[in-house]
Amino acid sequence: MRTKQFIYLAVLVAGLVIFMDSGILAQPATGGPPDPPSTGAPPCWPPSTCVPIDGGIAGLIAIGLALVGRHFYKSRKTI
Image (tube, rainbow, N blue to C red; front, side, top):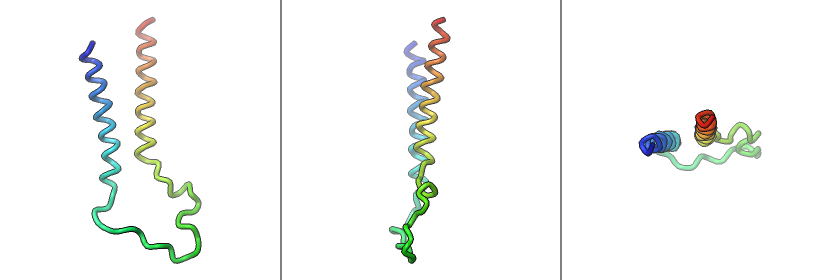
């Protein structure tokens, strides 16, 4: 029984490392801060187009699905 728990934990940690590492690889190798916009408009408008919700949301969804699947698996196993 402990072996299965260890395998589940190892898979979870490996998945988290992969999701967290993808953000590091997306950064540019060199360069400083971006230049200020030349117009008087806000730098990012509408806000929904510039909010970075790629890796973090995907990780949370994957973890949530894993937990829900585990819950259903355990509930079916006890019946």
